[in-house]
Length: 196
Figure 1 (spheres, rainbow, N blue to C red):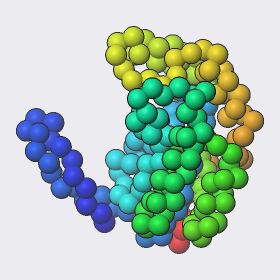
Figure 2 (spheres, rainbow, N blue to C red):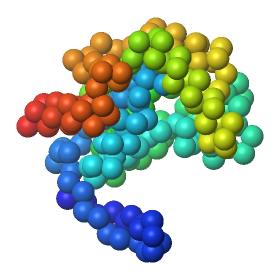
Figure 3 (cartoon, one colour):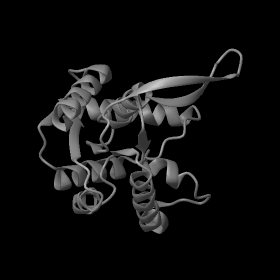
């Protein structure tokens, strides 16, 4: 079990929460998929449920750069993400990485460096569902939501990059047919079964 603090939405007070660890052994989990496939939602469910997992989300790093643009800062975000993953593993945390900002071989190499098992879950949906979700994302951006990608050309480019770098996995999910909770449960059961 690990402890964490959560802020009560009504009182604003910090409450200590104890979360079960998914495993006593460290691991790396890549949740991959096309843009709008459901990676962030499933990741959020896993992170809310289990302790001891570092969320190596590149989006969080890029928002720390005041004038972030993909053309100028993609390499910097890549290197910073790699270093945070290494730091998490050095400090006995497991790692969850959403999407493949970089070549899969680099993450395989890091898992080998730290002798931790690497799991990959691919989450997708039919293209018409992805397109609909992307349109909804653009609407949320208009209402002030912080959304990284609202360019249709970039949406298509990212989906093509996913298909080009996709790692075959026993964990393949269609987020239009399964809820984030169902996908999260299947991923956690698979990890538990393969780490014991």
